[in-house]
Length: 114
Length: 114
Image: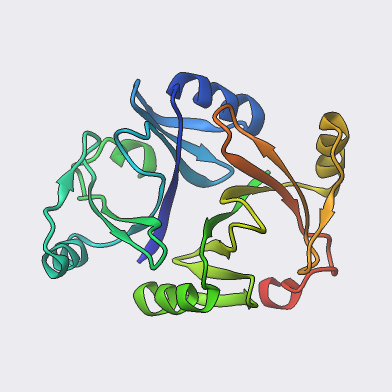
């Protein structure tokens, strides 16, 4: 169980990406008009459109751990456009925590992170 | 310039610490009644009282980089109870970004992180 990323809100993904790249020499792992995935100082940071995803932190789990957690709380596992799978849970004060897994060979990042 | 930590809000630090420890086997680096610093899956995660600190992500910089950034935007560098120093800046959508530095030999973490 490893920390995976933090996601913070943006209403203009391109503008935010430009800021993190110029300010912190971030590198872009993925980007479209609704969200982006950056490497900022060695940590993955997602920029998300608030209407689509809540700000959150994400913990990487295995597919088995994800399925067990989803079954335990009775939610369906989401499959994302980048090939990752996940569910959201909440900490005691309502902060969104994503449990995410990267099925081997099925995500956009396999080439970049291998 | 390295990613340092993410800070999320809590109105009961002890309760949140207990949740992260039990749910994700977090380890406690620092804790008092107003904030805590955890290691969650290899990443530092702070729990902060919203009235004292905004939710934020923090980027580790050198003392020189911190002083230069503070001078550039005209703010005073804060010295925290744990010995770290920092300032807050904002990204284009108002997300708080802390520039933080750990002066060697002056923080509570020197023994734990050395």
